[in-house]
Length: 190
Image 1 (cartoon, one colour):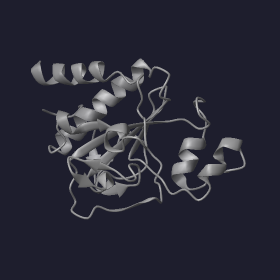
Image 2 (cartoon, rainbow, N blue to C red):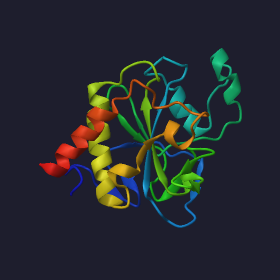
Image 3 (cartoon, helix red, strand yellow):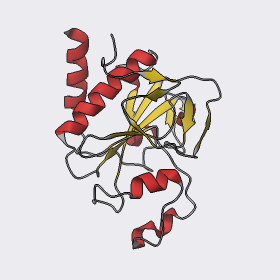
Image 4 (cartoon, helix red, strand yellow):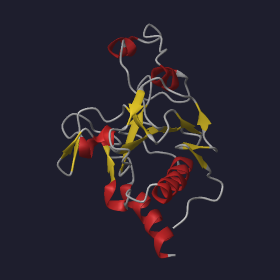
């Protein structure tokens, strides 16, 4: 298995992504990277292509810019990656570091998934389909992550809702898990 030929790694950063470093990260306690968590996000909800997601992860969101942002005041959150609707890949935190995306979470009996997970945000909502280019970029990014961090296997790729049931619903019912896993399986069988 090899990553996409255009994806180059340097200290947990992918060279082909636009880098927009977040202040909201810290070191992984055991340097383990063995889980991939898929999320969705839009700010305001259901609106796309705006600067607010990046501002949130940068810690500079103007919480007066939209009434729905009031609850985000003081929130310190980040993800490793964001895949925008148009396919732009943005990286906020090195995969060698712990981003703050999963919150209170549990996978396979282990608490605190941020310790060992990479978080990918898809610009979207629970109730709208994601774009073809998002699936393409997600596929390429997943292959690159699996090549760089071999402890991430297909059975260790989950949604936020899987590790925080009852608290989180993303990536939501519109995320096509069957398509995503089918495309990954084709890579391994072909």
